[in-house]
Length: 120
Image (cartoon, rainbow, N blue to C red; front, side):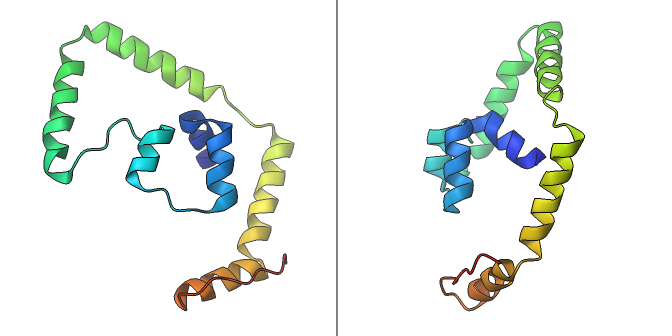
């Protein structure tokens, strides 16, 4: 559930539902459009782009950068799920991963075909 919570924090509920309900692949351009990526650059420009951003951050006031980082981390840390809901999520996850549908999905993937799901 923490992965889904991170996804919601990055792109919002609507895009999270779309991604998880549809199961579609998300290419780089779409990932940028929905907020999963801040930048989309060719591999040849990745190192330069990364270093430029790091230099820009490093030129800012250190106390301000550290303070903002701490505030953001603390805001995210307070998003918790109560124990009963966490247990339900665990059971649902276990049920999905041990289902006939999961076995069919794996088999279909290996056979490069569309799966036929039965809801069990």
